[in-house]
Amino acid sequence: MIDYQLLIQRYDPEHDNEPRLQRFTVPGDHTTSVLDALLYVQQKLEVTLGLRWSCRMAICGSCGVMVNGIPKLGCKTFLRDYHSDITIEPLAHFAVEKDLIVDMTQFLAHLSAIKPYLINDYSGTTVHKQTPAQLAKYQQFSNCINCGLCYSACPQFGLNPEFLGPAAITLAQRYNLDSRDNGKAARMPQLNGKNGAWGCTFVGFCSDVCPKQLDPAAAVNQAKVESAKDFIISMFKP
Amino acid sequence: MNSPKRSDEPIWWALFSAGGVCFAVFLPGLILAVGILWPLGLLNSSVLQYAQLLSLLQSGYGLTGLAFTGAVICLPLFHAAHRIHHGLHDLKCGYSSATKLLCYGTAGILSVLALYLTLHLILAD
Image (cartoon, rainbow over all chains, first blue to last red; front, top):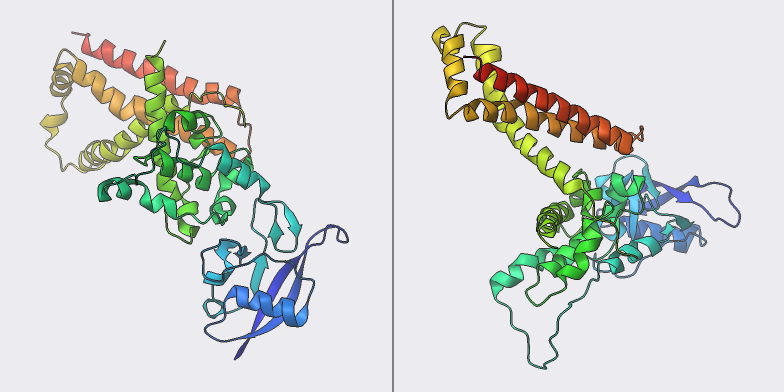
């Protein structure tokens, strides 16, 4: 066992004027994740530490935190990869509710704004078949776990919280590319606005931090092409 | 969320993209030829004679000359203007419709000037 030094940001809006860093010493070995360390702190050292977590296997997307300034899933990040103090802060660009818990309301509003569900007239009961080629078009973009790391990584979302953001635009592409879906016309107005696909300047850090490697920056650039096509088509419509 | 107003960004993004391609494809070759090989005397000097270059620009009813200016001056200008405009936003430094007009306006005026001078040259004799 090695002792790791954790600096965890604490903030309780009912008592604190501003956030502060609190130092904890946590024993760990090569299998200890940041989430394990945070749970050790909460259970053994500081019972009032607030954090959100659930599955411990990078499926639920709950345990996103900033580790030394980089958005990471706590369960998928290991202490062994850090050699000095490890600073753990709540996800950047979101309002902090308490300690490491952030308010995801705006993120969820952006997700629902692009109508993230199949829109079609199909009312039958038979299975809707898809070829492997049709599946391959959108499958990568369907792996999003809504962890919000890409929003913490995105400088444009940091400057402008109205920007739909990487995950929402990726989700719009995921449904627009699905052969079972006819809802593209309903989604395009959101993507066509200045806070839609055009809010992105292709920094690409969203794709670097995505724990499911689904390349949101590529999806946003595809959405720009779609929006540009939509722009040209709209010029020929009465 | 209400339906937002359609952005005019596709126009500027298309010019930016086209300019980026021209920057990457044509300018390195041009800089290599005119900026490095020619001054070093590694290029056959007859290639860059005025009469030779003029006849090249005039070929295809002068469209070659206009396409050349478009590819190495106009589109890269719009590429740079787009970067500056969005850079101002990133630096939180006066990003507004006024700076947008200034950036793309400058690119537009300089492009028209470049095309006018090219046309003037092509029609000179």
